[in-house]
Structures are given as C-alpha cells and as structure tokens.
Length: 239
Ligand SMILES: NC(=O)C1=CN([C@@H]2O[C@H](COP(=O)(O)OP(=O)(O)OC[C@H]3O[C@@H](n4cnc5c(N)ncnc54)[C@H](OP(=O)(O)O)[C@@H]3O)[C@@H](O)[C@H]2O)C=CC1
Ligand SMILES: Nc1nc2c(c(=O)[nH]1)N=C([C@H](O)[C@@H](O)CO)CN2
Image 1: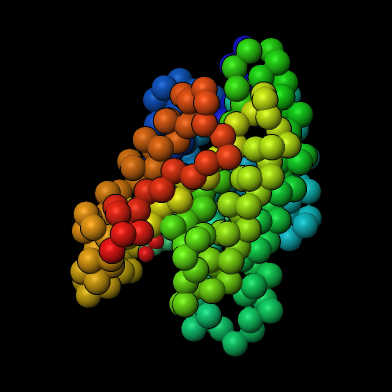
Image 2: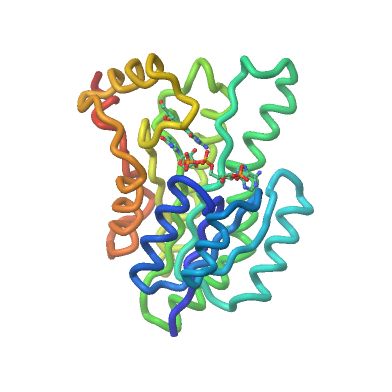
C-alpha cells in the first residue's frame, strides 16, 4: 500500500521542486496551494492531488484537515513548507505581523500534525516503514534576524515543534527540521542584494532548490534520524 506524501505550499520554488522529484520517484503526492498558478495544473498532470488551502485562518486549517481526510486514510510524510517571509519594515501593525508569522509557521504545523498523526501511524503500521514529518525551518531559528524578527521567532517555534513531536510520535514516526539559509533567490532580488547575500556563507554560493530536494530524500531514507536539524547554510554559521 503506497501512502501519499503531503507538501504544503507545493506550487512554487522549493515545494514545487520537492513535489516534482517525489513524483519522478513514483510517490503519491498531495500538495496544498494558496494561489492558483500554472504549476498546480502541471503537478496535477504529473499525477499529484492539489488542495487549495489558506492557513491564515482557523477555518482555513479546519477546511484543509477535513479535505485531506476525505482524500486519504494514511500518509507516508508531511512536509510543512508553506511560508511567508515578512519583515518589520513593511508594516506598522506588529501585532498582525507576529500573529501571521506564528499562524503559518507554528500554529498550522502544530494543528495539522495533531490532526493527521493517525494517518502517519496507519502508514507505519501497515507498511512497517517509518512515517515522517519534515519542518522547513530556517538558519535563523537559532540566530534570530534583526530584519525578520517575527519570522525568525516563528521558525524557532517550528523547530521546537520538531523536538516535541519527535518525542511524542516515536517510534513509528520521525520528525526533523530542514534549516536552509540562502538556498534560492527571489526573482525580485537585486544584483547588489545577491552579491551581499552570497558573501554571508563560507561557500559563497546559492545552491538552488535541488539542495532541499536532496535533504528531504535523505530524511525519508533515514532509519535513525529524528529530532534533528539538517542545516543547509553553506557554512554561514562559521562566518
Ligand atoms: N528560499 C530560501 O532560500 C529559503 C527558504 N526557507 C524556507 O523553506 C521553505 C520553502 O521556501 P520557498 O520555496 O522560498 O517558499 P515561498 O516563499 O516560495 O513560499 C512557499 C509557499 O507558501 C505558500 N504560503 C504562504 N503563506 C501561506 C498560507 N498562509 N497558507 C497557505 N500557503 C501559504 C505560498 O503560497 P502563494 O504562492 O499562494 O503565496 C508559497 O507558494 C519555506 O518554509 C521557507 O521559509 C528558509 C530559508 C531560506
Ligand atoms: N517563505 C520564504 N522564506 C524565506 C525565503 C523565501 O524566499 N521565502 N528566503 C529566505 C532567504 O533566502 C534568506 O535565507 C537569505 O538570507 C529566508 N526565508
């Protein structure tokens, strides 16, 4: 019995690359998307199931949980990838910003993990294979960020969920964080920003989404890693 792999925010960038790679490996894939875009139809054409979900409200979380339980009774893995990278300089409403960051990066994974743990356990029991939860955190989970304060705090909260859920869901389910630093630029990033950002790591490179794809596959294929963080930071922590 092959259980699907769920990727939230799977319609672009890292989530899209992860989804395409898993489809190439003939995994069943379910993605969520907030905004419809051509990649959603592309993934559906490759055999993925796509569920529209906006996790910014409790109703959005509840509707998603109801929708996925109608689609499958088991899950091989959940990749919590959905994210917004907001910064304090873009607003004066810090209450709204803090709540938004905690909602998508901490409250959503927290509630989805509790609601869907039984589906992961069903897979593990029926297949005698681990279930997996992967939290896409961020290098700043330990360092903080003076320009993305609420974002960094919410990613630290997400990593703390990794520690709690790895203890709660063992031994059938592994729970880990992947903490990228600069892995993929945004289209709007200026040349000056790109040059400055590259200098922040020892390796002075921006590897692209494939680096996250490899990290996800490493965790899926591990039989002994849980409660850990895979740091994708090019040695930035030593610079
Ligand atoms: N790219 C990088 O270099 C780094 C990435 N990371 C982390 O890795 C992960 C993937 O990064 P990246 O691919 O750049 O992510 P993106 O910024 O491209 O966001 C991924 C998706 O999350 C969706 N999303 C955002 N908010 C919500 C919400 N409230 N409800 C539902 N969906 C939502 C977006 O939907 P929509 O398209 O509709 O807006 C988007 O498609 C993220 O968790 C990110 O924080 C960490 C450090 C570096
Ligand atoms: N949701 C997102 N989170 C983050 C992004 C992004 O594009 N979307 N990008 C970064 C940067 O690459 C940063 O790591 C560079 O120092 C961080 N988080």
